[in-house]
Length: 291
Image 1 (cartoon, rainbow, N blue to C red):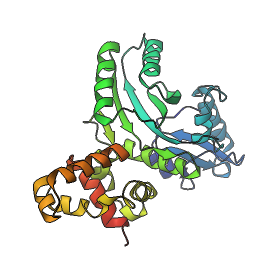
Image 2 (image 1 turned 180 degrees about the vertical axis):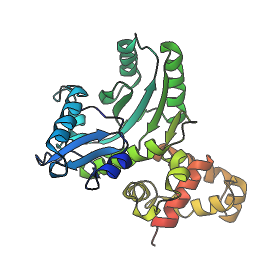
Image 3 (image 1 turned 30 degrees about the horizontal axis):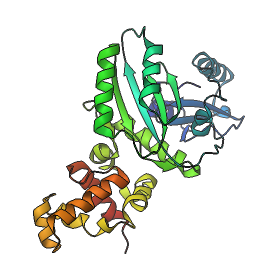
């Protein structure tokens, strides 16, 4: 099914029994409406026969008829099916805005050449793309991705905005992390072209209890819990990212501290020299470090 431009709160106001789920569970007693924020589930017994037919017709008309064999990640993310993949993967969500798109196929071909370790790539609708990439020694960071898509926008006369997910193991929890990343992207500012969890943290989580976030909890354990930077980051934050002051407080040579920061960036993709990244790591430690 294609992702529809439906506001969950509008549906909830009309149908109080509606709920937002992370996947289509295949229950024949429900109607499922995929959106950019997740899947709205409507019990059929809350609908009249006419409404049920109308929703079914709407879903059918917006179906992309994806070849599930060619796009197993679609079934995995949106239909509750399992996927047997080893390694870490991240999802790039791309919004497209254009008047005409005559070179759409060529744009897709360019995407294929840019992401050498891409394992799946599909349109959810005419303006929303999912790219699934496997982690490798060489991958594009947020700044590099912004440059790539700026160039593509110029070449193909389109405007894109993207959200860069974090690399995670493709297990059952992966879909929960993706759902949270979907919600983050839908709440992101339209003023930034390329965003990730570091740039979205203040806007998205300022009104949400951080300790309830499964994604952020996972990132703490993945990036920081066993890292030697766990004790350094709070001091670096206290010194507003000043390397010299932090090294003095730690009785550590400045070059040694820089080496550790660079090593952390290589291992996680998180650059503690950037204020947003340092702030995110500081929050993760404040909320999830219980030792």
